[in-house]
Image (tube, rainbow, N blue to C red; front, side, top):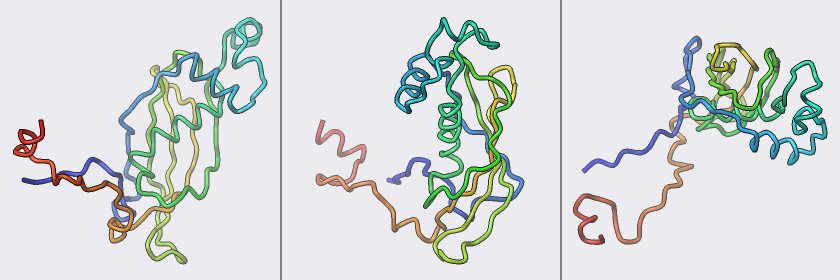
Length: 179
């Protein structure tokens, strides 16, 4: 029997400058997402939650809060870029290049633009990426640069968190015993 860990992200050594990572999950933004995020973060601009007000703006409808767009795209990239991160170190050059509306589906992709070993943290390296988000029509809605401190492979065991079952390992045989 072989136990396979689920995808847990890339280590510092796995990043290659020039490689592009198309993040696997698109996300459609719904009205509740936008309203809750806007009010939770105390953004009082009515273009994000007042349909009557928004109808009178140049956009003619509710505009998705740009903070939500940034957070969602950053989240989409975690699987490929920062699942094994120690910390995000920088988010720069944020460009909001196309409006995002309720009902839009966003997809994102990142390219590795640089990497180097950390001078002060021997267990990690710095990875630089440029990320962009596309709506379903292919319009670039957002882009940013990010620097992430990522664990090296040799440190994988130090942060293992999956618990061992008190009744023993899972196997085809054990399912029949405990079903």
